[in-house]
View 1 (cartoon, rainbow, N blue to C red):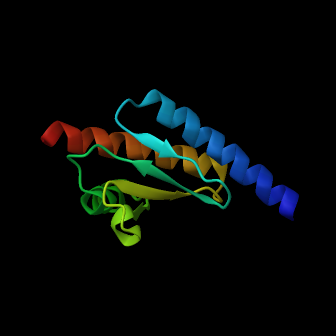
View 2 (view 1 turned 90 degrees about the vertical axis):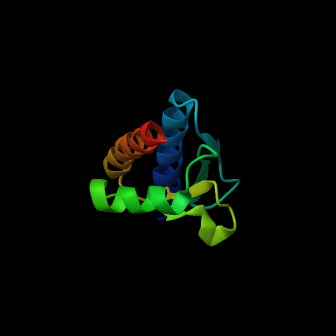
View 3 (view 1 turned 120 degrees about the vertical axis):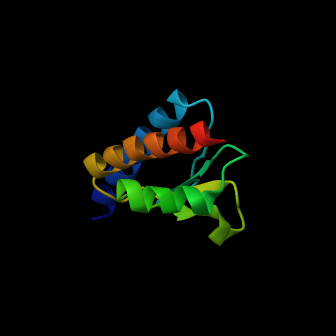
Length: 103
């Protein structure tokens, strides 16, 4: 069970690392252990508004960093199915682009 969980989390972390490397406006804060990571979002964005946009328009859930005293971050779980995470990252791309085009 532990080996399976590690494979899932490590594979998903690699997906997030590759996604974050393609975006110049986010920074990945990789976990030293555990099953979640943080993404630093552009300073002019609000993590709660981004999270609300993701839920309402893209049916994608992230946790706003405000809940962890990190207002310019969002938290992403790494334990999901890889295909589901990949779709969520595509939705995050779209939501970030939406918000950045407004401001």
